[in-house]
Length: 422
Image (tube, rainbow, N blue to C red):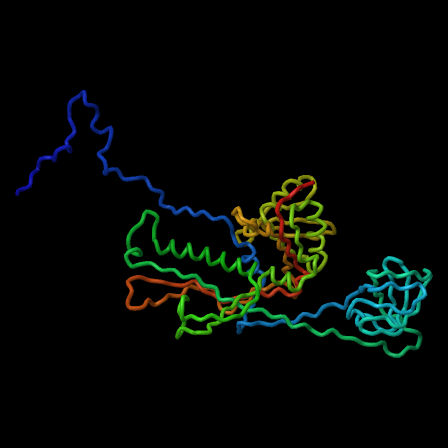
């Protein structure tokens, strides 16, 4: 069978004038499509808090567990646990708070406004006090009354005042192992795509998710150290360890729940109003710590601020910080709060139940600023594939944990389901 130079049947277009222009429609399969050479990524959240945390304070550690000490301030208040007659010279106080009051300490009932001076104490009770230590007549004290501790009133010529000390409290957390794997066959790596290198896209995709996964653990992780057997239904380890260790770092919420007072671990459980935002979030947050405050807000709170800010709030023009849009808000007393929109604090975009949107406030100056505890820096390490597998693989990897001393300098607010400017 021989070939031919004659066009195959159907490949010749009629040349008659009345048949139309032969170039009006190109033959099927011969047109090169217009393809955008860019890969368009759709992302619903970011990891703003992690970018700022790493920038503000990163500390090296040499162990998976890291410890630090907190020493709390001697309390200035206690409460009465039982009714006390105006003539009584003894009173029970909240468990253990008698240790906050020394001999010859002046105390004041906040409700009744009368004074007393303490002569003898136990850890749970005032056993001897002198009433009417001032111009206000002695009053009846009621269970639950707040007692303000004014401090020692030594008599003339008195010996040295009783001394006291506060024991440091040891706090610890773990570093967590964070890694994301990526792999590709040799052919997939070499073949040309409209949108560029498939391996480069794989690295970009996994790097983004690595950052988000680390961010989620630093927000919601709870301190945990446990073991798992790698011998069945798990990814194998060195020697298929039967008691491989799992490490999880305790995140921001865990620190707030464990160590913060109720006014720094706030549960809105509904709509947040502008008055509530100021009184329960902003003012408590700015009462303690430094003037370098950062407030990470979800979209719903940003929208709330948009509704009320015109003519009411002084918000400086946006600037760029770590490629993030930020704004500085000046509040009463000249205190400034840097605002960061963090969409990772939004309600999850699903229809099921959730714990609402979140506000996270961090103090970034002074000894109690949170720190990114870095055991091993983030890096990409190549993986040697077994049995000469025709491809390549790598992991994005780091080991790090969170330290957030005295969370009462910070604030966590959750359960925001709506916002109202009213």
